[in-house]
Amino acid sequence: MEGGFGTGAYVDHIRHHVKEIYGVEGSSVGYEQALQKMGKATNVYLQVGSVLGLTFSHDSFHVYMVNQVLHHLDTEPGYPNLNVFLRESRRVLKPRGVLTINTCSREQLDPDCGVYWNYAYMEKAARALQARIVPIDELISRMEALQFTAIDTTIPSGTLFHERYYNDPHMVLEPGFQKGDSAYCFLSQEEIEAANARIHAGIEDGSVHETMKRAAARAAEIGEAVIISARKPV
Image (cartoon, rainbow, N blue to C red):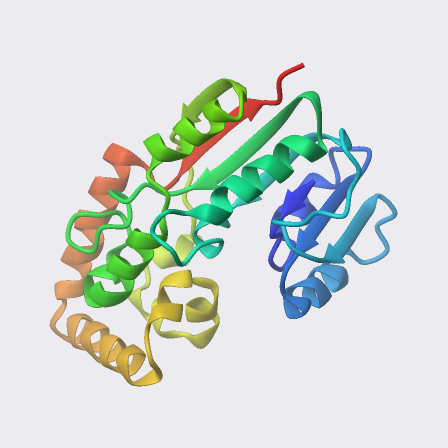
């Protein structure tokens, strides 16, 4: 099962390798787009709902995954909804079922020395997103408190965005890209236009390519995401 499946990119890939896959998405727009992507697939079961109040029975799934979802759960610094999410995750997993969380570290999101080059041009948004990100140590601590076992941290070697992001700076100026990057939610339209203007200036004078190069070098050191996996106890 995937919680917060967006437009269904992960579900669409994984459905070819499993008997059944379920998904819950908070956005009806994402849900409709995902349905179109699935076509006539007979092993996919999607619904609109919340990862904080799942409709599934206890002990339903072998695997439950969320991808870049945790920063949407809380606006308060204490991350109260994180506990709700983890308890619900444990409830719907079968004994020894696996919870997989794809997230980022605050270090990866840093606008000055992080791995996403466009954040250098929109510091306010990057700082706001950093504040929403649960520190990895805190996440692990809360999983331990709920008696999850075999907790493991992995830095994946792959990239988070489309290949074009790393080669063509014009990509981040496109509305479609900006709708898919949570950082832009923290900016007004005027602030987005100002960030776009700074990127345009960097493209014109060529300095954007140095910014992109620095971010790529940093990504090679610390990765672009962090995956935390754990098992529900027996």
